[in-house]
Amino acid sequence: MDSVPDVKTAIELYNQLSELWGSAGMYARKWLSNKLEVLQSIPSSDCATEVDLDSGELPQVKTLGVLWSPVEYVFKFQVNQPAEKCDQTKRNFLKGIATLFDPLGLLTPYTVRAKILLQEMWASGVDWDEPVGENLSQQATQWFNELPALSSLKGRSKTRQKRYLSLFTCLATRAVHLEVAFSLDTDSFLNTFFPMASQCSLPENVTCDNGTNLVGGSNELKDLEALDKKKVQDATLNYGVNWHFKLPLALHFSGVHEIMIKAAKIAIYAILNCADITDEEFLSAVVGAEGWLQEWILSLSGRKKWRGNRADLKVGDVVIVMPTDTARGKWPLGRIVKVFPGKDNKVQVVDVQVGKSVFRRPIVKLCLSEH
Image (cartoon, rainbow, N blue to C red):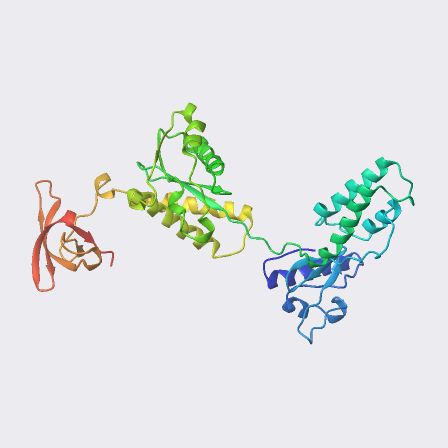
């Protein structure tokens, strides 16, 4: 049995396995899938005998000793009812246990009780066909009475687990580091902090969420407890780290952090594209997102105009005028009609025509349009 993410991959897997086994003189039959599109690409003579493609329904089939429901994508259990009247002996009890076939160990919490009870029967010294004691007989009867309830149990279907990101950023350089957390408790947070410190060096001061700003964001997070501040501080006490925890529900106290979080989400979504992935694939995506953030975030704080020579603005250049009393999205375009060089022959002030009006502005209040 195998699981693949989509129909195309399943069909390719069937073709590869058929070719591989065919080269060894083996011919696989009784194929079954939970997708009709896959079964339609397989010859009907090679599909499981229970499959009827014309009906459009997928049957339950027995595999590995249990029933598999392709529609629900779960395992089910079929048990044989024990005899209504049966003496509780070692032989009869062992016969009842043998009727329950569980090669995958899905029923271990139930079958282990029977194994322990059988050991107690052996320890009591009774013969195979000799009735066991009253206490052992009651336990065996109770175990048999619970046996029919297994028919209503279903194995796990596809599981989804949440993963979280701890985002660390340097407020001086805007460098970003991402670590994957497997839960929202304090230990998981510390397990992301120390790897970051090993790679990027220990910080002296850390400003951190305390976790309560997540409470109420969704039903799944209502039971979330805040980070154990004392535990965090004690774990890093010997390293000289000073912790500063933000107030709950005060996201506006850390606008820089929220910008980084939003950028990290955009990067992760762009890489994963809502795909179902494994932990290894998620770790790879996080590394890719971190690399993108390192390049993009650092470019935002670049001050190129102070670091090197730049061509002067000249007559005819189209610029964006940045007035102090106008919203950023409404800054007008203008065209330079006259320039005024300084003593160093560098243009510092220009006349800009905006519509029918001409304004004199310093170049620091202008942004050269790329087009």
